[in-house]
Image 1 (cartoon, rainbow, N blue to C red):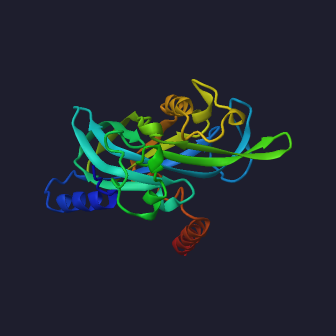
Image 2: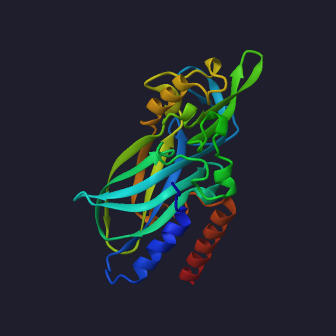
Length: 271
């Protein structure tokens, strides 16, 4: 099963949009953000605590979501893209974009990871980020769903943890996510922000203690625990006009330039 990379899918949708006279057609931007304890993720600093009492830092977080779909209030499904790669430390991977018909949308659906029937070695384009997500062939092949890594405090210093989820022994530990929303598209540009609560992977319904977990890629029990916990890790923080948070995650330099431009505008307005 070969996937169509989301960039190509978005181009196809764009061409369709250009040939469609429907004036209420809009552009949707789906963003993926990350929080811990209600605050935006700050990587590489031991400043977080999970339900097991582990004090930890995140040094790597990358994952794949697939089959991303918007559903209308009437139950019609609109495909956005087949696969999206997200690296929490790279803002360039934050968003995916597509053109969609106007109307009322009520649910965003996606699969965390890749469904077992599609998760085969070579199914994704041969790009560095996808290749780096490869699941070892001796362990069943296919692709990781997530590679989350970090440090945590132990009595004599710091230890490391590896939360690597995927098709352990060929089993399917991916899961579907459906997030309710209210989005009324009538032309223009629109945004949906999906938030991953990182602590949820380790907190409930089963407490996950880093001290009890070494390498988990061949550990079906650990994979099942993370699958169960992860189903509640996602929520939507925003669904509306895209310009609502257009500058929220830009670099500090861009933010300062924007502020300077606004100040200059105000000064000219006062003249």
